[in-house]
Amino acid sequence: MKVTVFGATGATGHLVVERALSSGHVVTAFARDPGRMSVVHANLRVIQGDVMEAIPGFGLRAQRLLPQPVSANCALDLLVSI
Image 1 (tube, one colour):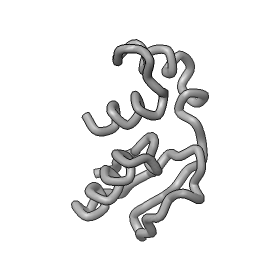
Image 2: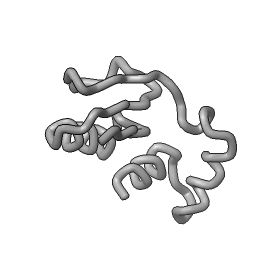
Image 3: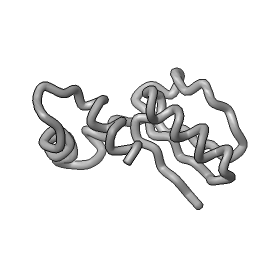
Image 4: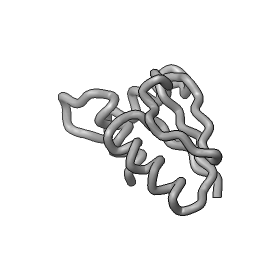
């Protein structure tokens, strides 16, 4: 299966990437700072970007899911882990 992980360098995103790779999936890691990606694997592709800018309106929708105050990183990690 092909898996895309937004927030891949965060605590939860990192675990999701590792778990997906160890399960044999092909993973695309979407991260603001690809240099923080410590995982190296033949089935891993890292793309630089910010999901809050890549998907119009996503930031507003993500922040509405959790009580305020919440950082965008927290919302993205939670969405990735679900």
